[in-house]
Length: 273
Ligand SMILES: CCCCC/C=C\C/C=C\CC/C=C/CC(=O)SCCNC(=O)CCNC(=O)[C@H](O)C(C)(C)COP(=O)(O)OP(=O)(O)OC[C@H]1O[C@@H](n2cnc3c(N)ncnc32)[C@H](O)[C@@H]1OP(=O)(O)O
Image (cartoon, rainbow, N blue to C red):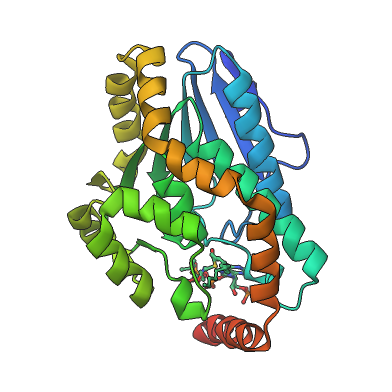
């Protein structure tokens, strides 16, 4: 494993490793890889691990940047684990949503330079993670990215919407969210959803190259600027976390929503047969 080699440090929990963290102490750049085959769907455990990993990196004064990537070929993340929302209990739904809130607050509010290396599909929660980074490089080709919630009969929460608004602006967000639009890498580039599109093999080298630009900026000035730009959106969720979690559990528990989710899961399975 890469993280056993000097000068890397590894923060992953041995034997668990659904979120692998390799910290290069020479460059100050950590690479965080989601590792939950087959599609890196984000369940309670992964989100909890991710939140903890981000917290540790933020507290590590030798760390200046973080690359968010995937250890699963062809997938960045399939978004939230639909099975956490289907036929679950209200208590589990609330715990799941709190873990998502905390992971997202850690990522969007991170003092680090954060870059998403999108080497595969990135729907819904996957798109949220990517959008919450400072910069996105996506692989060209068959992969898609977007907030497709309405296609599942669910609704992107206000903070997903806020992040998208800050990324691609009001008009594009309105269309994207209503339609549950999924974009190819080139389409995503054209609306500003990603910053660069390159062949798959070039994604990581491109991220590393771009990081050099960002790391030339003195940290304190960059962090103050980032915080100022993101504070309003972060505070909006921070001020109503419990209400938001309860609202999620109530919404997901509705019969009509459960029916939609059941039909969507069946359609995913049918695609394969
Ligand atoms: C005023 C009102 C306001 C209300 C707002 C309040 C609250 C908000 C309420 C709800 C919001 C909740 C937000 C949700 C955000 C999300 O992230 S929802 C998840 C959306 N994700 C998707 O739609 C992705 C679906 N998956 C795919 O499209 C494909 O799998 C893929 C990612 C393109 C990969 O394709 P590939 O062919 O490689 O793989 P398979 O399709 O064969 O999948 C393998 C295996 O994995 C299962 N699976 C896929 N995605 C998920 C997932 N997200 N969760 C769980 N399981 C998933 C798939 O079913 C296969 O399973 P198998 O058949 O058992 O092998």
